[in-house]
Length: 416
Image 1 (cartoon, rainbow, N blue to C red):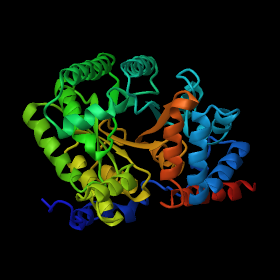
Image 2: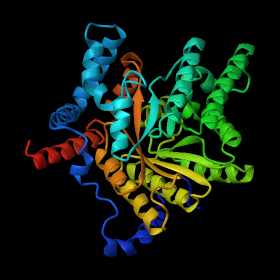
Image 3: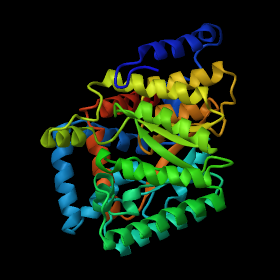
């Protein structure tokens, strides 16, 4: 096993070698440059609006300033603030304010051979009333998915079911007060109720990863639920943020634990969503940053994790949740090379609504098991998610430049 935190390029070379023999004979398994397939679901008017939006989001300064002003405007309930948000980034990245309002997007995705991963946009709730309301909404989402073959998965955040303060304290301290112990029992009941209902309805439940200072508490809860509900099939999934230098080892350890305790590991792989926050906090509190030192190390860890999961796909149900074209290509080609069903239920790809349509719809067109994260919820509740989406994918990471370039290519192809 490679030393933790160091690039594991040998494993990546092996994965490339695994697929190279057939590429020259059969041609590419999937072509992510095909913009005709990528944007076939958009009218000319919708494509022009998308191009305009991505062009604006291609400016980090504009995104950062606009994000702060937008959040403040919504919080202060300024006139037209929610309307302005809904007519711009909300319509690009969110399915609707309610489940029923999201049905149009769900149907459009399914018509393109793409499944929906329902994502209620609530997070960071603190009061018992808010936490219980989130649970009730998640139960409704599972019911909604159960009745709709286009929705095999619902996703949730533990911070929608437990307070951040409690999760952080559980991770750092063993001695909880009487009140905190009672609060934690309520959290356990909420999480178990949700997982139990998902198992009853045969709907998969993805549980998102969050900041490192509360992730151990979340991992403990998710592992408990996987042991309880993943005996015969993968219902509950944990999320592994591979930009953390300890997550590759944790993934392997999680697999060992699942084998010993007799359940299927549900693993959603992502690169990560809180890099700047994690590094800043580590610097402020003078501890080692949990994040890999550079992108190359993160990419190596992510792709090695993909290979590990594919090698054990009978015992690990994986969701390759990435906007990275290379990781998606490697995984798709390895599935084909290994003569595995492209639509195998343990081997899924996923991207966010409004992003990387060239990856999603070309994979779906090639016959792979693909889903789109479709967030939904009132504008006010979803606003923090939207702002984070814009900030994370601004030109700093190059994502908006790539998205704008692809949309521009399709506009040229259409003669717009």
